[in-house]
Length: 179
Length: 166
Ligand SMILES: [Zn+2]
Image (cartoon, rainbow over all chains, first blue to last red; front, side):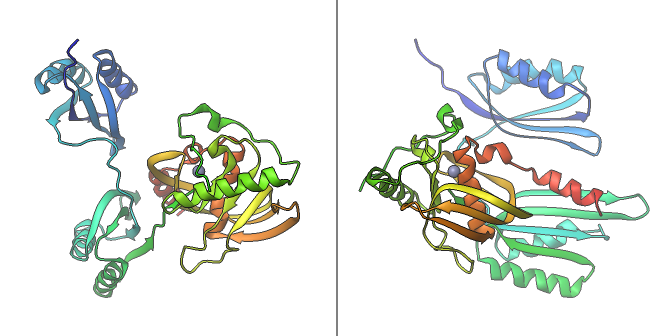
């Protein structure tokens, strides 16, 4: 028997949240012989968002033919990319940055720009808006790798804070212990 | 010197509950030596529990002295360890020799009071905090058949809690 080579795809689905989206999509993929890798599935502002690594012998077109009908049925936007990615390539973060502020305008841009200049490689960023419509607040948590060391990031955030004292920023090292 | 084979998840034996040590004899000492060699062979490893090498007795070795600027008791052999007091909660990132290529955030008590026997069978009491307390809690979980995979917290939940309790 000649086993066909499998390839990795990034499947993105976005649409109105409803019960059963994940079950329906993953069942169809499973029944078609696809394997799943890393995934992020989140509700963002009433929309459900799926980013899913799919491993398959199929082509990108075959995968689209498989998923398009269910995506249409669930009113989800579907996007498929062939990727170079692999499993087992986790990078371990060594720093966490927590930010909160009443002022939303430009906060992600300002904070991530100074952090990038100071050598932060972001592995994960999550942000949310809390409070209410008249008094919203913005909260963000970033985990990443300080490629130029922690002091460089500290200095960058201090400089930002001196210009924008209304942004609360906390920087803490993450030490991962193996045991 | 012997480095023992590690059980790795999803090996179901990691779910076994280990039994207390009853005799503090030569056999125990020689096993502890091998267990320590195995821990030292793991890069960056600061603790190990006997069930990780398929030996289901309540034996733990901890040594966080390589970490900077923290309070610790150095190299510790902890036999039949029991946590008698917990205080505070803290999120920290953990990895495990029995769970390759995966790390995650786990909530643990910040400080603990621990009773354990040493390899000679003498009872000691320890007050521990931060990293050392975290490692001991992780290792005692191994003795009870639990992995840190059973205790992962999501950062998104953490964000959400802050929002609710503003
Ligand atoms: Zn472990």
